[in-house]
Image 1: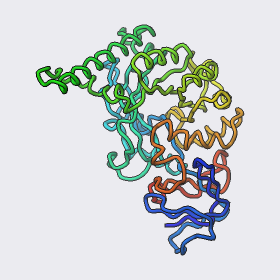
Image 2: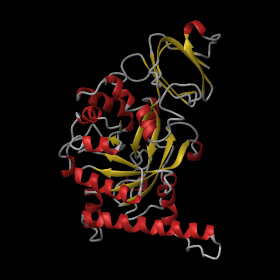
Image 3: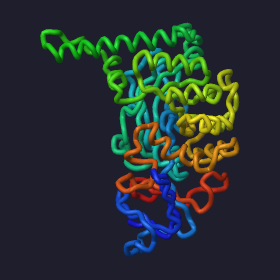
Image 4: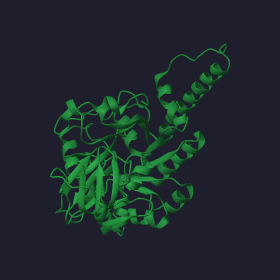
Amino acid sequence: MLIYNARIITLDKSSTIYENGYIEFTDKITKIGQMGDCPEISEADYNAQGQTVYPGFIDAHSHIGVWENAAGFEGDDGNEVTDPCTPHLRAIDMVNPTDLCFTEAAKAGITTVAVGPGSANTISGAFLIMKTAGSPRIENRVIKSPSSMKFSFGENPKRMYYERSETPVTRMATAAIIREQLYKAMRYMDSIAQHEKDSENSLPDYDMKCESLLPLLRGEIKMHAHCHRSDDIFTAVRIAEEFKLNLVIIHGTDSAIIADELAGLNIPVLLGPIICDRGKPELLNHSIETAARLYESGVKFAITTDHPVVPAQYLPLSAGLTMRGGLSEEHALRAITVEAAEILNIADRVGTVEINKDADFTIFKGNFYEVTQTPNAVFIGGNKQ
């Protein structure tokens, strides 16, 4: 299939923009070029005259399909609050891919989402990354599972377990529970390694919590740490350094205050939600100017919705608000495409318009960030939505 007569913003390494170009694709992109080199056009192809083609948008942190649309308790699968430490839980077992919110997100141009458990537990479980449209069977839409391990610091685990009169009710206990579980997992991993070196060393008894943390300890997936306040961010940094984990800060409300330190540590931030109030103490320093400050300091970041806090279809509007806060249009766009893909380690598949990448496109006649605009067309895996 072809998209032709299009203005194409590729966001590739050379920042190529085709003012009048075409894209040829199946489920992957096979050719890109100027209209003078366009293959023969058929009636089934899409004429994008007067329109701009962007890479499909990526929401790098959400709970879409987890707190389900208008479902109440029956569709609330975000937090297993019977245990404050649950690394063995997997998002693939909690997401409902037929939730209406996926359809709304896809129609708004959000083609890829990172989805996982909430932030009530110190270690909540494994996230996954998936497409917003396709098969009703989730395995057929997953890009990566597990994609990261979710940790939580600060107010959320304190509040949840204080209400239950259980540990943790302090930041000290939150950090202690995380350390204890990581040390157990390290010993478990070392025991497996000793057995592999010498079979006379017995294997440890199977421990699903420890087993689930092995990809993290081996550096195969990242530590995604829910943090708002600067002290909580640095607790996450301290633990990540202690266990040699690859850290990403989630939310990062105070990240602008410590942007120089984060830049020096090369720690990225999945920033959001942008469209929200200061509804709890940790949000005291929430500002639409945070993204611009991170950019100025050299911190890598992406913009997220934290769906359902902000519905996923409003990701482009969230990017627009960061522009009101001083971020350029280019970098607001990058924060919901290529930067998100790179932080999530899926840039080999999505985030740019390049040959061999997934055929995910969002096509607008107007500006992607304007409240009055919706996409003229969206393609996911080469299929028009």
